[in-house]
Every structure is written in C-alpha cells, then in structure tokens.
Image (cartoon, rainbow, N blue to C red; front, side):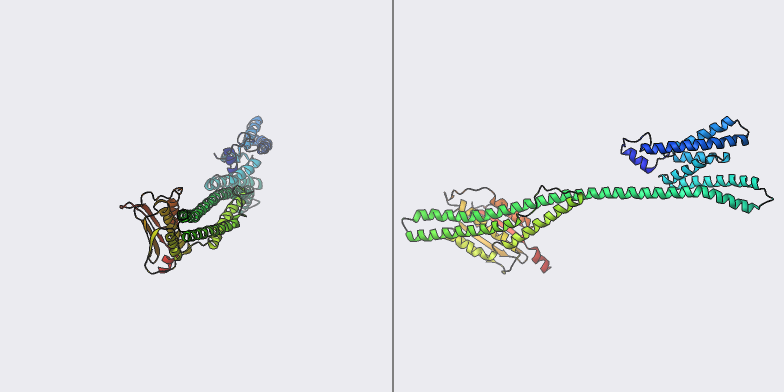
Length: 448
C-alpha cells in the first residue's frame, strides 16, 4: 500500500515531530477523531444491519466498530480502506468511511488507474445496493424502472464523485506546491554554485592582474636599471680620462632614469583607478546577491583592466629602433633587421613583441655584455615574429646584476596568453636565442 506523497517525504526527511506514520501530531489527532466518529456511525448502522440479516446485535455492533476503526489507517493504507468500504456496501454502513477513504485515495500518489478502478467498484456496488433498496421501498406499481435507476444513479454519484474530485484537486495542488518548492531549492543551489564560481573567476581575474602588473614592473625596471648600471660603470671608467664622454654617459643615465620614473608613474597612476573595487572577502546577504556581486566584481575588474590597458598602452613595434639605439649607446653590439611588409597589429600584440625583445636585450646586458647580438623582426600578415640571438659571451662579461629568473618565464606567459609560441635556449655556438611568434586574431578574422 502507499502513503500520501507528503507523508513519505516528511518521513524520509526524518521529521522528529511525527507519530508512527503521521508527519505531524495534529494529523494523527484528526485521523483518530474521524475514526471515532466513523466507529459510532458504523455501530448504529451495524445494529440495523444485524436486525435485517438476522444475526446477533452484538455481532453487528462489533462489525461496525471494527469497520469504522479502519479509517485511522487512511494515510498509511488508502487502498485498503476503500476496499473495505466496497466490501461493506451490502451492509449499508460506513458513509463517513467511504467519503474520507475516497478523498484520501484520490489525494494520494496512488496511480490513476487504481483510483479509477476502485472508484468504479464503489460506483457499481453503491448503484446496485441503492437501486435494489429504492425498488423495494417504492415498489414497481408506483414508478418505472428507469426512474428508480435514475434516482439510484443520482444518489450514488453524489456520494462518490465529489470526494474523488476534491481529493484529486487537493493532490494536484499539493504536488504543484512541492514541485515549485523543489524548483526553488534547485534554483537556490544553482545560485550558490554560480556565486562560488563567480568568486573563483574574480580571484582568477585578480591573480591575472597581479601577474600582469608584476610583468610590467619587471620589464620597466629591469631593462632601464640594467642600462643605467652599464652606463654608470662606463662613467666610472672614463670619468677621469675623458670628461666629455663621461658627461654624455651621465646624461644618458639621467634620461633613462627619467624614462623609468615616467613609466612607473603612469603604471601606478592607472592602478589607483582600481582602488574602489569591492573587497574579495565580501559576502552576500542572499543567494541571488551572492551570485550578482561576484559577477559584477569580475566585470569591474575586466573594465579596470581595459582602462589600464588603454591608459598605459605601452610601447609599439615602431619603437624597437629606439630600444636598439639605447643598447648601442650602452656599448652593446646589436643589429636590427626587419622582414616583410610593415603593418599594424593589435596594441597588445605589438606590446608583447616589444617586451620580448626588451627582456632579451636586458638578459644580454646582464650575462653577455660584450657579445654581438642580432634582433630580427618579421611581419607575416596575421602574425609577427621576433628573435634575439647573441653570440658566445666574452669571458668575464657578466655585469653582476641580480637575476630573479622571472624574465624568460614572464616572456613565455605573455606570448602563450595570446596563443603564440615561445622558444628560448642556448645555441650550438655557445650563445643564446629567444624566439617568439605571436598571432593577431583580429587580423586573422579580417583576412578570412
């Protein structure tokens, strides 16, 4: 037998306030009250049935009490209760039992075909008993058979159909409410999951931004300071022998220092625009707010990053000549060659290519100061390629500048983030080579 859906779900949830198969104590009190009323009714009807069936009155009353008491099982065994009402139809007892039993059956999760079958049995049995009872009371001489049948059908339908329809309505309404509640719970879980994922995306965005800032700071400071150190060493060497050359070196050191400060001020200035972003540990007051706030946070970080990129667009490939001249002024033997038809690429592509060359030259300054260096720039339609290769360094050419080991890693991160390829390593002649190929997706889409 089957319980109602509400009872099953409450018991599955382990409701502590229930009693036996009842989810709530007031449900148990209601069923017990209905069962007592049904027992009283069936006892009176059983006494009348005993007189008609010529059986002891005590047996009829006992039968009525037993039959009426089964109503207490209506939530647990609704099918059994209805079958009992069908079985006692000839005894003409259990009117309340029939009404409540049919209502409970129709409101439960019992399959519809079983509800229809039991309702049909109740209708047929009730129709036969009522027809025979009316026929014997009215008599064939006072009315036709069709009138008796119509009256019997009307009485039977009026006692069977209403509780069934009411039960079906209440059951459908309950299932709808449960479905809506489950859907609401599901939406809350999805919103919480979205909030967690949005927090992860926000944290990832912050990490990416920190890595980008670290790369920019490294590129700006390492290259400029390396050149300043080289010029300062040359200034110290020629200060007494060639005052004019020492003056030129001092002027170069000053220019490079001012350039480094200018780039740092620009970077720090645009970083201040992100000071108003929401804190990472902020929590939402509701699942919906928890989902919306991190999503807005990611959008704000993205907007701030775009603003910083626009405000500090950085160097372009056209400035490679100046970069090479600065290295030459520092005493490096460096050559620049450009291949292909010169064309414009996206700002981030040109900036990345420039930073690769800049960092490679910085490494040459640090570790191979006297080595001959070649810088190649190749325009290939939808991509740009750069290569910096130095010959074997002169013995003792290391400048003694500190190296954190982040230069090559930063270059690789920049290039691979744009879908390009990066290769670095020693050459067979004892030098070092850095190569990068960076595609421009915007130009590829245009050409396609």
